[in-house]
Amino acid sequence: MTVRLATIEDMEGVKALLRKYHRDTISDEDRPDGFVTTAITDEQLADLIEKEKGVTIIAEPVEGEPDRVLGFCFAAPWEFWTAWPLFRHMIDIIPDYEFEGKRLVVSDSYQYGPMCVDRSIRGTGAFEALFFASLEQFRDRFPLMLTFVNQINKRSENAHNNKAHMETIGTFDFGDNHYFLMGIRTDAADKYKNGGF
Image 1 (cartoon, helix red, strand yellow):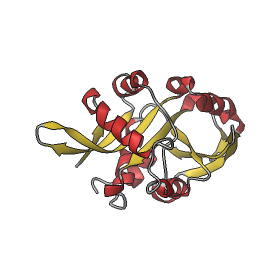
Image 2: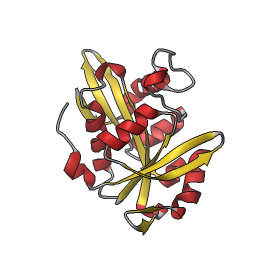
Image 3: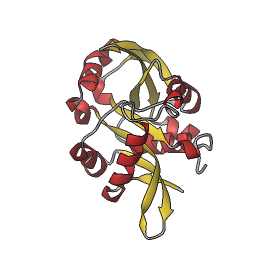
Image 4: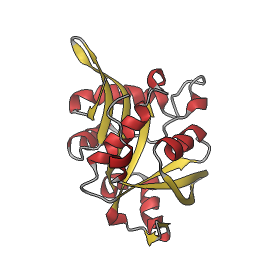
């Protein structure tokens, strides 16, 4: 298995994994282990892959077929995310928070997520490898990465605090949901990344 940037040839594999673990289509068996909430159109996903270089994947070669996508991580500048009401809300509230004693600035940060790892490779270090590979992709462009985690998604909260070493900056509400706002410096990729899993 390899961790790499996705190409357009990986798009169907990313979509299949997203369907498998999305809140609206996840199986009852998988739901307690976490879920993805962000929906994305084919056009948006293609732009994220090709224009933003914002999809990092874990891929397993399959002879004579496209690689099997076993994990993905989305990331992009805030401008990309303005089509989603939740992200527009986050853009509005980011300056209300501080990280490491400094007021947050939208232009100094980007948004990461969703992240999804297939059950078959969980617990192998795949989450960490994918997270820090994605973080490293944006290190030269932004000093800070921000994300949100639904407060009912305990598996995701635990992974981002303990495996990704993210800090909880604060909380916010949107609609009927309650979220943690989390952040990490992009240069943390140097400290925590591992070469394999």
